[in-house]
Length: 356
Image (cartoon, rainbow, N blue to C red; front, side, top):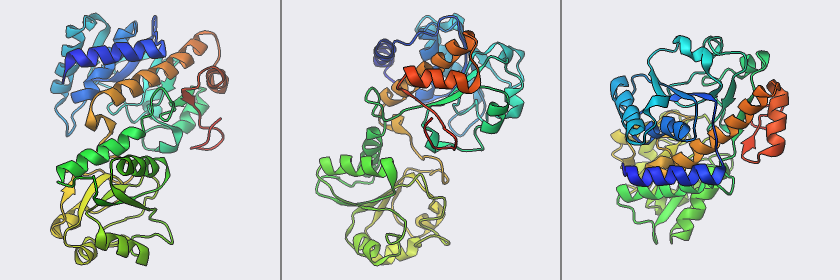
């Protein structure tokens, strides 16, 4: 990781967003790779204290996550403000003003909420349509009058969904698919598929979209014709939970192999059976892949800037909520006030996925 560039990118983002966390205590994660940056982003924004939870994961040990996070804080002169927590029962949780929803902080369940002070706020580093009940007990937040807002990833200051197309390009390059003048299929719907198609097309690909919904299921005649001619398929489906490729999927990997022995698959998100794809000897990237509802690779796969911008923006949304709590506004009232004044913020509305 290029630390000097990361430091400059953080400074640029803090200035552009006018992010000031002075007097606030933040709960986030201590992690590895680019995710080790988040605690220092908050500290560089003058947070009073940053408590960074860590745990074991496939990306590294808890000790390595703590080491990487504290090394950055040391390098950038904010080590006195960054504190590693190894337990979700640490009594210092009661000091927290602002909670982020990053990996080791999740799940934000009733047990964790019960250890936080009554005046806490929650900032989500995604838009509400990405909500998963297993990650956040929204009903408990409503019951406890804890304000929760998401971050508008498509905001002009962020444009994060555009990076998804660049992620697709990087995966395709790893599969030795040139993109330019290649025949590609984008499997998915919504903004992720739209942005991926746009980026691939701008870079000279002959790309088409299959929604995975009737009449464009992956076993349809249209889909089979597209698969026969394609160099690769990019799976970028964040809505459907049903299997796309697999024994119980819309199409099996063996059927794809029969249709096109030279096909490769780049997976960003969507339900596919990686073991069957491997058995069918279809080239697949990345490895391993994530289950339905999760992304195999995130936008930081192409570099740290999208992560820095998103996490700074999420902290900006959270700081707005925290200031409203300090002013005596709670729950929906705090959310409404922030939504009126900060266009980076996005709410759940009356149903998950809506905007208030």
